[in-house]
Structure formats: C-alpha cells, structure tokens
Length: 239
Image (cartoon, rainbow, N blue to C red; front, side, top):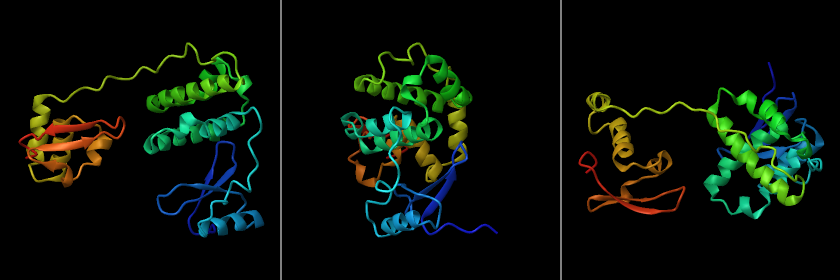
C-alpha cells in the first residue's frame, strides 16, 4: 500500500515523469516544495510552510535556466503588467502560465517558431478549444514581454488563428417553458436560471449575488471583470 503524503502536501507527475510537490492548506495558494518527500530540503521547506513562513520554496529551488520559457514566465509574473491585474484575473493567468511552464518551461525562447508553437504547444489542445485559445492569448503576452526584454525580435505567433468553435445556440421559448415547468419558483435551479436569464450577467457575477444586493425592485451588481456598477430592475420571477 503506497505511503500517504504528509498533511497538506499534494504530489503530481508532470509530462516528463518528474514528481512535483506542493504545500496547500485547504483551498489556499499552492507553494512548491523540493523533493523527494522526506529529504532534508523537503523537511525544512515543509516545516516552514506549516509554520506559515514565506520561505517555503523560493529559497530552496534552483532558478529557471536563463533564456527558457520558464525564465520568461518568472520575469513576466514580476512585471507591472501582471502585478496590476485584478486578483481573479491574476489567478486565471497563473493557472494557464503554470500549465505552459510545466509542459514547455524547458524550451528556449529563442527557439520559438510559428511551426513549433503550432505543433508542440497547440496541436495537443486541438480538441480543447477553450484551452487552445487561452494558450494562444497567454503565449502572445509572453512573447510581447520577451520582445520588450530583447529576447525576441519578431513575434513567432503572428498568423496563428483562433480555433473554430461551435456557435452556442440560445434556448427557444419552448425550452425555457419546459425548464420552468420542471423547476417551479422556489427551487434553487429556478432561482439560478432566472438570475442568469433576467439579469444578463456573467456566471461569476451571478455567483456573487446576495440578498444584500436586492432592494426597491432592483438588484445591484459590481461586475467582477470590469468593475462596472449596475442597477438592474428585478424581473417578476425574482421580485
């Protein structure tokens, strides 16, 4: 029977077969840990993480090799462009950048070509249009940063097109009526449906709505993405 990892330690194996260790308390931020589990370096970093000290990984892992994708990502994440992002946007960027780093961090920035991006970075995501598009976007941000640093002179992603995605069909009146018949007013399903349908807001904004936002026949919304403050009339199904 395999031995369990220490408390709050998560282990993953990347595409190169290398084990990655992280300290994560609940749903908090992941902190990288040096391996293997039980080594002096691991025990020191793990103890520091348990104690809430910030030194857990940065003092123990090697810096990324100069000129690599990994080094470029590290540089970008220290830049004003990244640091000025909203926390929610930064979390989304970090997730995609970490995926790029894990899969391609060893590659050199100078070796990036349109063909290499298409074959190595994007072809494996051909059946995942969302991940494909987000990877293209983040690569272009990284490439722009590399050009600013003088690591590249031209944009190797130029000419790469967005993936074709299927158009999302809007529900018909009959489909709406069927849903409302299945889930009457008072059910959670109907409430979520009505909030999405009659406020026209993003899922992230609907998720954050509370009774404190409702008053005098309106619902107040501060959009997470844009920061815009809206006052939306309440539909009768929400009144």
